[in-house]
Amino acid sequence: MSEAPRRILVRCPNPVGDAVMATPALRALREAHPDAEIALLGAPQHAGLLRDVPSFDEYIRIDGRSLAAIAERARALRARRFDWAVILPDSHRAAFEPLLARIPRRAGYARDRLRRAMLTDRLPPPREHGRRVALSMIERYLRITRMLGVPDAGDRLELVVHDPSRERVAKQLARSGIADEPILLVTPGASYGASKLWPPRSFAEACDGIARRHGLLPVVLPAPNPDEIAIAHEVSSDIETRHVLIDQPGSLEDLKAMVERCALLLTNDTGPRHVAVALDRPVVTLMGPTDPRHTHHLLERQRVLWEDVPCRPCGLKTCPIDHRCLTRLSPRRAIEAADELLGAAAG
Image (cartoon, one colour):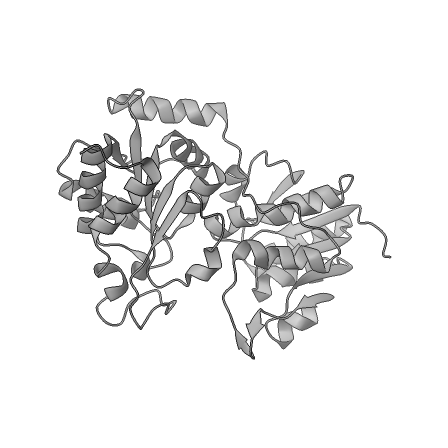
């Protein structure tokens, strides 16, 4: 049996949802090696998203992606003398820094010859009958830790919400006249691309229906970028019932607090969905071009809706035809899904 690692570096996935779905693998590493120092290497914004998750000791931010920045980080990592690098993303870049840092054991998926050459412990991408298949990201990451002899420690997602974030969100809602009122949180954007976007008018009709049937106040929350803020304004302009538009969104830390505060989340297939699952909030997800098998897990308090059109799941960022996978997905289905999660409507 190989010697237990004293220091483990875990390369975090870049998408918000994938980072949250990596928490079961982190927990497995922690429980298998409780005395090891575990550091998580990832995007700067994920430091707040994953703050105080007990499965790791330190968050190392990836500040800069130039060759000079990569070389400097690799030198710093080499000085730390990590024993293992658990590389969750599939990219060449993610495997390159641990290689440059001369971490002795480097584990991950070998999707091609170059990735294979960068790793010491390799898994082939999931396949059935010779073809690659979609797999729950939770399971995908756990397969890497299992390869290292690490037993699973459950599949629940794990995030921590802090009181300062709760206080900021409470003040933000109070400025809009919301105190203890139950809210329907609506996140109508998607960083992936336009193909993941349910039409603004559909969001608005669903908001009106859920608000009237369940007494929830719609709160429209975009990510802090101009494109998503513009989408949120369009949704807001179409909502007929009383609602609130948050046009100055905060950080991912504040997103956690806002999701924790909601009675229901209505969202595209994006990061907030997985934040809701981690915080045990009910969520209705509108899914377009994505293969649902990537996220087919922990479905007790989720309703994932899609249209069975022949061109999906295509995985394209922009639809080349009429975006039928989402334009044909009716607001009525979202309202009915909310009924299932919240209980039958009163009237």
